[in-house]
Image (cartoon, rainbow, N blue to C red; front, side):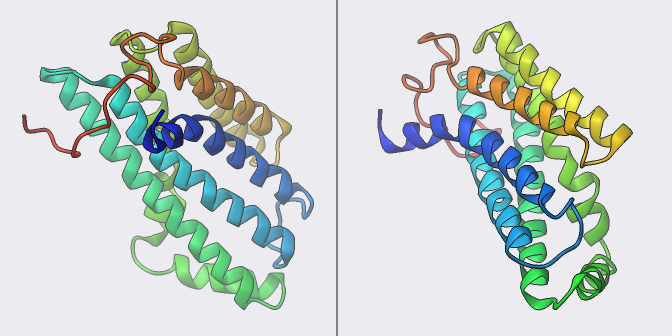
Length: 218
């Protein structure tokens, strides 16, 4: 396996694992706005998570190929949406890390974040729907790959189940809910299975060519 394929394979595991790891680190400070080593560690781990999610998004696009027509358009659209959301989350982690270093206490951290969120577009794009779009995109990508017979239905179903549980737990009980961690863990299992494709079939990362340029022309 060449380094690019090795990184792509790793991303299916490392991304969700880092997402869950950051959640556990934040539990030490009860998910509160508390600058210090735990805040910094959690957000640094989340930064790694979203960098890996960017790689995973492109790898999932690679799993879908070759594809043409309306299916190709669908693959490209959901890939672009996922990458834009990944970028929003990376920006969010950068802001949170900076605020954590600059703030002396929780009140100062909250003030810095409120100031940044006050800029036009920052709240909805970086902290709101723009950041959450990634998880919807992963759900759609998993379904598309299953419909294209690039991954097993089980792997897609587990991924979708994890994303749905994560979203429902966050909406109903908040980000500190234990069910959020369960949702992340189920999503982790699902993406791990997705990364295996159809066990050496046309969707296997070890045999598929590297993804081409992100374009709809061909």
